[in-house]
Length: 305
Image (cartoon, rainbow, N blue to C red; front, top):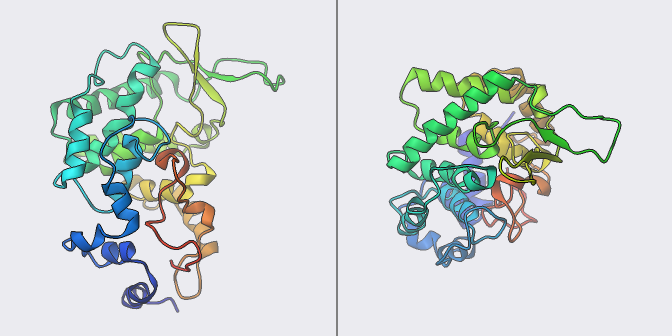
């Protein structure tokens, strides 16, 4: 018989590190103690952004993802300071090409989760981006690659889309939709329809090496399975966590298959012992691209569920 929730909490109270205890037992009111933990203090000591999109721990996407997972939001000084830096950047409109929009794509989901959806630039971008993806799906369906000779192993797969006018759902969009406060049935329906499109095998087969052609110059941007909302191996737990937030996934076969796979890592006591590769914690790694920064400072040798 699996342990009850009470017994699991008791187990974590004994064995888990300080960060996990704060999250499990909702002790975020004791912020001073939490912020003394090396994992948290290292984040709190970051005083400037090196960029928005990137693998560095000092890039916006990797700072914010960790702060948000720790339970902080716009009411925390550091979250607010970093967010306002990005909100005030000239990145939210006039996107003529893929590389001109990428910073907005990366930034907006974290701002939404932090509580800035009512900021004009975030609100407007959210709905503009949603409509852009909806229109692309309606027009392209799953025929989004250019025709190529697939026998040529050196031939790259190229998306047959114009990045100025079209976009397919990315891992960043999935994150945004997972955390946006949905307060009307129409928005819920629109988002769930896209999520159902995403979990179709035809979308999930987007390969690692795929590219979007620049709309203005002779250049190709890497935009394969890592960038798009594809359930790649290195972010299985993260991807499942995001999908679980959508009503259309509650009893969907795709979600059930993920949970069945995870059951293979479940102990008789009800705790999960995932491979270390599923909960990576490495310096200067992408959170959403590769599922990094998910250890919460736990010892790699510890056994927790």
